[in-house]
Amino acid sequence: MKPPPIQWTRSPDGVKLAYQIVGDGDIDLAFCSPNQPNIDLLWEDPGRERFFGRLATFSRLILYNQRGSGISGGAVARPHAVIEEHTSDLLAVLDAAGSDRSALVAVESGIFPATLHAATTPDRVRSMVLLNPIASFRRHEDYPWGFPDDALERFVELTVSHWGTGEMLRVLAPELYVNQRFRESYARFERLSSAPDIIEEFASYLVRYFDARGLLPAIRTPTLVISHTRHPFIRLGHGRYVADHIPGARYLEREAFWGLYTEHDVEWVLDQVQTFLTGVRGAPDLDDRVLATVLFTDIVGSTEQAAAIGDRAWRRLLDEHDEVVRREIERFRGRALKSTGDGVMATFDGPARAIRCAVAMNEAVRSLGVEVRTGLHTGEVEQRGEDVGGIAVHIAARVMAKAGPNEVLVSGSVPPLVAGSGLVFDDRGSHQLKGVPGEWRLFAVGS
Image: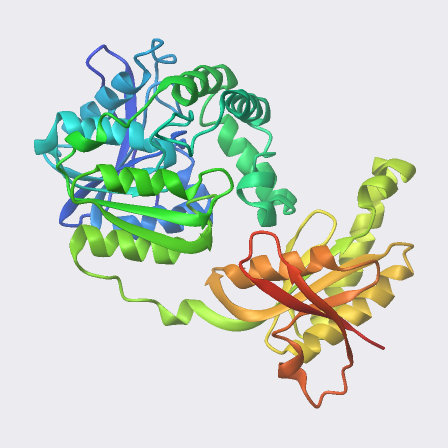
């Protein structure tokens, strides 16, 4: 979609704030996140464009950069005034946007300015959705879900040291960390959203000191709290506590992994948000979901090989590898979607062809002196333009991670679909797949 224009206003203490308005729905909706994304870049990324574009289909969406983030001015807020100043920034933007009464969607520690705003100016907030909220990062006697002090310090140090590198994807979206292009794009987005010193000051105060527990009972705003069972660092007790202490709050618990709000469980979450805020559930776009066999490959020992032969020779070898792999994918009528740096992701509309392509690729790349591991899973995927997403993609990546050199490993969903094809499978038993619920039966493709 065409990016909405940047508009400007000033906070009560004179800081220049950038904001955007997109959509013309019946309700005003302001979005609050812990590290405000640079609104000048939001519409360059398909995942963010899809997320915010969906919100704008049923609202007049108000996006902004709080002081010290994105393209807004100002330095980090004064110690012990961080949340108060960020809340005043929110109110200044709402005033400039002509919004007398808005709904709020807050992600994780975005709960802090959102709940302060709801508790202190209840006439300005019509409803609120809190996604995987945290009332306090620190552990307390009556709040055992926070970090103990030593873990809290490590968490702050990790956040600050990895800011702008993309390394946090190892935790937040491990299935996307292997995608070099996504990792580099995510790192750039971090760098252009907040400077490292601002992140350090903000994280140090927010994580160590701010505590929303005392605000919750004072909130009279209709509130929906959503928690995911497999968040990488937010335990379930956080969301349950928040819902229990906001009078009349509704609580939903979702059995799913959730680390990036623009990438994980997006459609289900936005369905719940839309239904709660408007009373109308968005009609699912059935054309966006199809059954496919997802294939992932990875070069075994790529780091060691690159170190052994040098960067230039390694780049030349990768180019040859990519050409061979893509040629085989085309031969078996698959669709090569992306390079993962030292591997590839592809989809096929037939699992037997996907398996035969994987076997052919393994043989072809061996002539280059490299070995690959391959994983496949058949399931429903979400079509995202030229890309695909959904749990089936994550499962295929996790299956690949279990494969050995020159091994083609498939999930238990695949063998029943290729009965009668002549393909042979060796049972590898049941396995836990990182970030995926339950146990999964895996099978190796035999000769």
